[in-house]
Image (cartoon, rainbow, N blue to C red; front, side):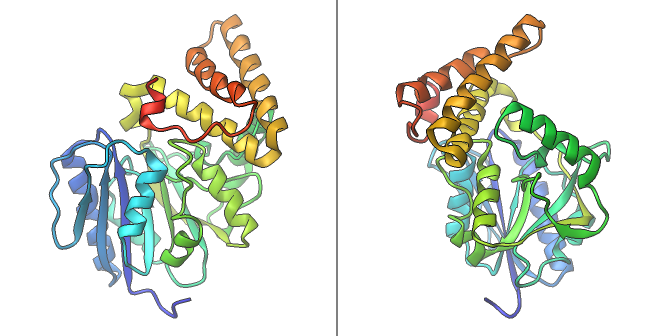
Length: 301
């Protein structure tokens, strides 16, 4: 482990984000790093084509197509060489003071650092921290996160909560140890639940920085592909259930998802039933064993 941290790499995975927004976010991150006397570089991984060009402190990685969030993060991490990596969702507001506040917490041996996420209205956003396998567990975790998670002090992330991939920091060697750090079998969503499980199993600390807030608007890049997003979400939840409880877990999630969708339809509430049926068919056909990762090509079949 390094005795000091002198450089920071910021990894941003973009999809259908405006070039101007990406450029402003990159400039703000670099300015915050300069405020904290870190050498810094941006690794901008484009899952589509963008007009932002590379420079001495900004490397654009593109041409690979839409590989998903987890695999995109891995591309950025593997191209980096800095001591410390911060994974930044492009929907984070470019707030120099907030980024600087996070970077002042960076030092060796702290494991994974997770800030408090706030909505653009300034409210604590508890939902990204919900850690669950089945619907009842999600409701229980949501209640506990809403009522008990927020604190203005740094503390160990409780077991009922998970990290959020919206904004996350760790030493590069920790990220590489954790598969850089998300498992690319997860195309989009649930990769942070899996990362949390693996980090805890490996004894890597997860610290919630109660005094550090990041504004995250969220969900902007996926609004035009909602059906594919729902398929990826459902597959991620199947995958988490399978990894935690084996075939029985996948089977129970299949029943849970089916019953939840039926209840929503009866109550005339929005339900992504067709997307869920698509994913359920894959897992059912595989005998509720891992049917293999979803890719952009698989998602559109």
